[in-house]
Image (cartoon, rainbow, N blue to C red; front, top):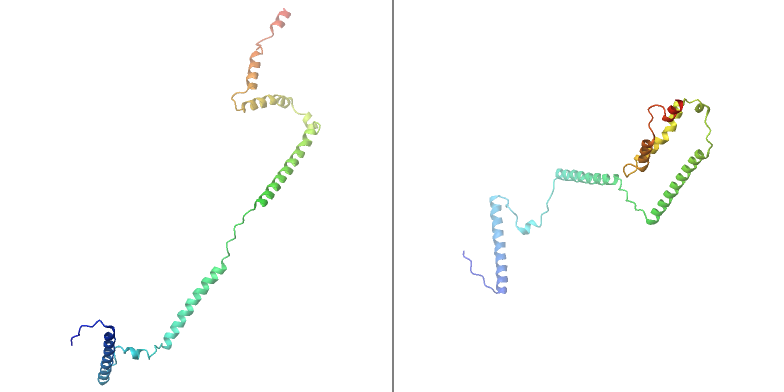
Length: 195
């Protein structure tokens, strides 16, 4: 059976389509008769018959599907519970300019009070009369001599700490030491007076 070339007219094409559909119905009916005589089920049902039947699922398959669905929902609920259990992050707080000014003022007041207390604590020590305790009167002479030399050492140390090399105080003390006469024996005037 050879096919003829199709015409381009739409009316003719519509009529040809209707004819082929009728031929197909006839062919399908003849094929189903043959299958019934042989006793073989059709490999694929025709489109008209396929719409009439519904897909059925066995009870065992329904149970498996229900168990799988319950498992999925349990996982979803567990994930939601974990998200709800975690505490939300604390929102970062920002300080307003007025709040910052209040903090600065409070800090300045605290420091002023601290300095005032420190000055009040130091003031009674300087204003109190210098009364030596009885134990201080019995100190050995060597300790008293060490105390008198201490201010000279302190001034030398203070002079060394200045940023401009050797200070004037150290230079003056060295010059004073050089000008002092170094006596190895009795003074010359005392030797002349005794002879």
